[in-house]
Length: 208
Image (cartoon, rainbow, N blue to C red):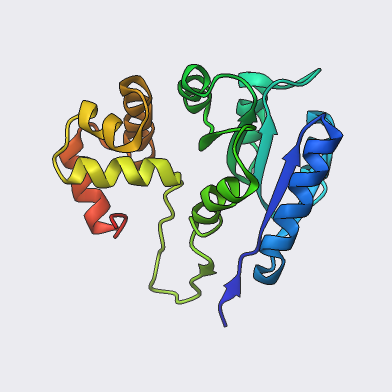
């Protein structure tokens, strides 16, 4: 019998109106999928919540809060064994901060200027990113690569032979951000160039 891995969302934001409104919206959207949505008003509160559960978390982290936040906060949450993804949320300039947060390990940067519908649309692929079933067959050794949705998009474009500039144009991000994502892809797949990355992606059916 296969075991279903349930994911949970945690919104960490010190602004109560934004935090509670987004939490309510995400709860209504994902409740039928069995996704729990929790909120915390600080990084310390979020850490305590995560450490006291055995759930698989996707953390939406405000990167401009008192105490632990910013790039250091992303790295702390990213290193927790039961945190699968960290999403940076902020009212700061997206073009300036997306490369920084990606370098720190964030899956994506979401501006607080976006609508709830836009955020929901961006989160849905992350919720389906990891394999939802743990194989129990003895002769099967599944390998899960922790690639973000954005990294998979970059990998797909690499497999099509596109250079960094064209990938940046396709995804509406900077070339520097593309380079950061490619480095993370190489690190996760344990390869050293694009050809090796594409071959390994094909072997493990990582391409769309």
